Length: 274
Image (cartoon, rainbow, N blue to C red; front, side, top):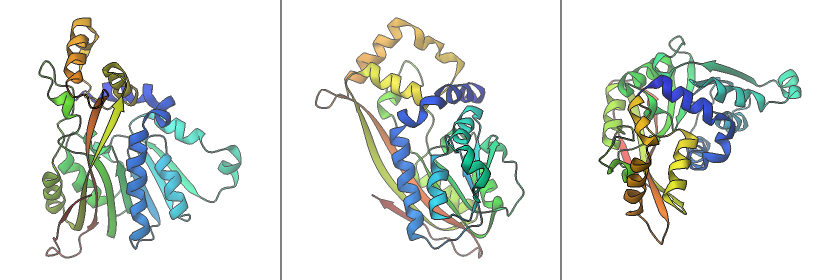
C-alpha cells in the first residue's frame, strides 16, 4: 500500500465523508453501542482512525467527563471534526477533545496513557497489525479496554475475484485477529463476525462509491484504472454478481473487544457470528 497516496485519497474524501460512508457509520455505531453493556469508566480515550469525529460525539455522550484524543493520518478529516464544534462549545464546554495528525503505525504517546482505545474501520490501513496491537496494549492502562472493528478476508470479494489487477487490501481472517490478540497480552477477547452488502443501480455507481470513501487499495500501478478498456472489463466482471438486477459489494466485518492482560494465564477467546 502506498500510504502517502492513501492519505491523499482520504484528504480528498473528507468534505463529503459523512454523507458517503454510511455503512462505516453504521458499523461504528454498533461498535460503540457495546460500551453500554461493558463496565468501564475511562478518564482518557484514544480513537485511532477517528476520521470526521462521529465516534467522539457518541463517546462524549457515554463518558462526558473523559478526555478524548482523535488520531487520524488525514489532516483534512481532523479539520472536518474540529469544525463541527461551534465557537460556543469551544469556549465554554468542559469536555476535553484533542486532535492528533499521526500515523497509527507510529503512535506518538507514552505507555499506560489510555483507559479505552477504540478503532473503527481503520485497522486494515496498518502496515503491521501485530505491531499495532502490541503498541495499543502498551498504551493501555491496567484493566484498559481495546474496542475495534475492521474488515475481514471476504470484504469486497467481488473485486478480489477480478484477476486483471489487485484492487483490495489483504484483509485478515477472524482467526488471525484472535491469534494477534492472544500474542499481544490481551485477555477475554470477544470477537463477532458480521456481514453487510451495499446495493447499487449499476457497477459504475459502486466503483464511484468506493472512490468517494477511499476504501480500495492505493498503489501507483492503479493508474491503469483510468483506461476505458480496463473499466469496461471491470464493469462486466461486477455485473456477474448482480442480485435482483442490482450490483452489490460485500463486506465481512469483525467487531471485537479485549482487555489489557493482568495474568498471563487469562487467555480465553470467544468467537461469535452475529
